[in-house]
Length: 256
Length: 327
Image: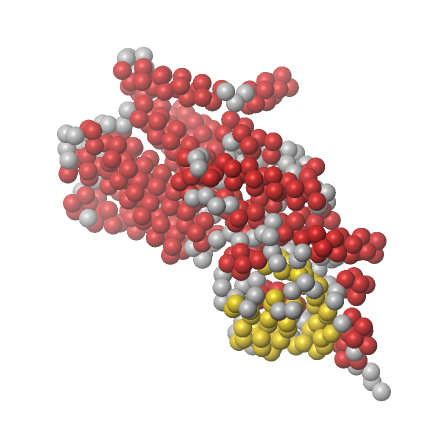
């Protein structure tokens, strides 16, 4: 199995603060990879590095064997990396449908003149974008809300919309930043099923940051543990659970 | 009151009204221009109103749809006005046929400058972009004051009266048509996505730099076109007519009518034009009452009359089912 994403010795410094240091990670295609770690460990920074919001101070990130670090975020998104955000970033005053269409737009092929004169590929492309976006919303149980502003959705639905929007990019890699944030145990186990369905239905490789251990242990094939910007453990859920360094990072060192 | 509301809603859903209005409007303009149906003052005000529609809808592209705050629109007007007036007054006088190309040259002049301004400042947002556009406005004004072959501070006089009511009407319709077609395409959605959340837009594959430059360039093009029309309506321009007060007037129209709305832009321009004419006899009080209206507006209706809503007349047919409903 070839690696979909390779992070090679990436370091990210903000002034004196070293948010990520010498991070190495390989994500093969087809797996679900969890990233866990205490608050401030650098998990979201890692996502921002992968999606190009930050440029790594040192190191290289490769996607499908090609270097993506240093590219613009939009370019990386178009290469096939979709993401959600820790604090939901949907387009609030646009309708639910428009939210998805904006991500789908990158696949529409028509020029400015065609849209200006409403000729050529414009009409068919727009019709198709609406149909495809509605299909996607249908899958997420959101099609009934297509024409209300996204801010009118419930919190859980907003999270689902954000995932739907990311999938409209047709990504091969989906980064989920705390998808279960603010959810109770019942909602979290429903989310586990939901994410499993997405993985199988859309054939995406997922990397997810999560604090709900139950979800991570159930869903992920591999887990990376970050602490103070360093990878302190890497392995299957069973290995991680038994790793003394992980327990130490989460619960503190034993004094004996 | 409820009856009036219901009547308006029904009217808004009749999309055939728009083409009828266009034909009637154009006919009216042609008739008014060639007969003595209207006196010259009324014609002047109507023409000014149409120029204001162009200004308002083009600034709305940057301030409403893109969500930036540009105060430099009068600068683009100045560029358009001077470029076109130089053509029709100094280089090729007595050739009225050249007016349409002259308008385009005015627009292009503004668009080229707008393009470079956007290129230089695309990384800045909010207050910083406002300051850059303010600086741009001042540079244009003082540049014009110091170039002697465009008249310096005295300005350009003797510009032929070429802006007729039908030409202003047609230009306003073309402007609305172009901006509407731009907005309801992937290019326009990219612009709106930046207003909503730039980081998320970027992560969804929106090329934010290109989208901003496009919005800015198109906006300044039509700012220049409006300037060209104005120059050939009032026949005398000087750098002082394109100052911050002029920019502020356009801002008032945009925020009065409603950001992110074509119907709002038209409404804002129409209300503003008639209000400022009606208040003209009160002299200085005009500049007290108009800002006061703006203050009240910002308190009670910060997004303007139509804020982010659109009249179904302007929506492409396929977008109709997606009309924003109340949540």
